[in-house]
Image (cartoon, rainbow, N blue to C red; front, side):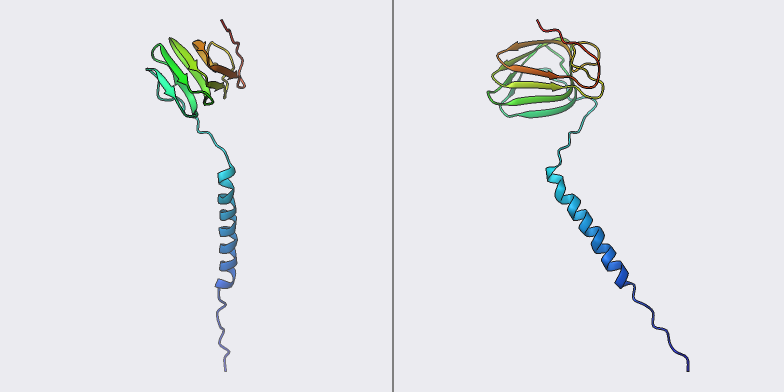
Length: 143
């Protein structure tokens, strides 16, 4: 009489592998709220009119100023541009009691020419403006 071979069940191997992958995925997913990422756009929506910031805001990319405008930042609030501000020959006036922070990145230095963190004219009236250079060369001229 021939012995009949009973096939081995594959669920004994698949289930632990699936649970291991699922546990790894859940662990990485659980770490995500603690991660902080900034998406850098090549170019942001240009600013062409006066702006009032009553809440803190963060922008990533190249910000073009299309007219002479005034940006008013409320007390205790911060507007951060991670990239560059290009006034394109216009004047950006920063007023209020808040803070504007410009952080250069990807070759944007701290200067006021070329592809630097600030390229153009900025008037400061009451607000605090902080410019942090990126990994590129540049100079900053304050009048």
